[in-house]
Image 1: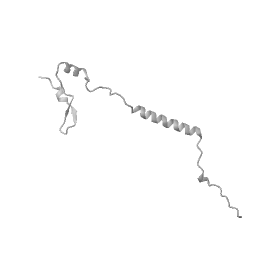
Image 2: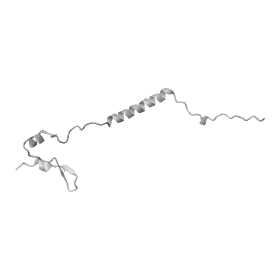
Image 3: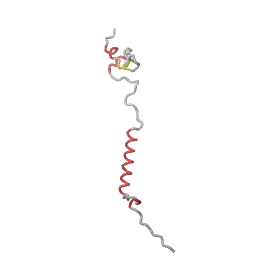
Image 4: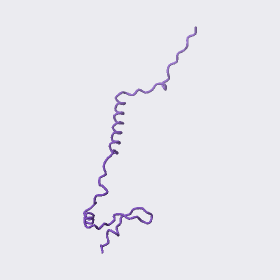
Length: 91
């Protein structure tokens, strides 16, 4: 009967041991980052509703039933502030 030679495991076969404290800290940090990311992007109401007046001049115009548009499309169709319409004197 021949005896088999047992070889010792190489150092590359062993995994480095991670202490339980480090893994708990990493887990807590990952969960905290996840909670912060989800909390900052959560559902929330819009700050200003679109149907409410934005300033006192718009309130005055609505009371007098004189509506001046806030935006008008340019030549390419993108909305731009309607400065000319808002700054001209009413006739």
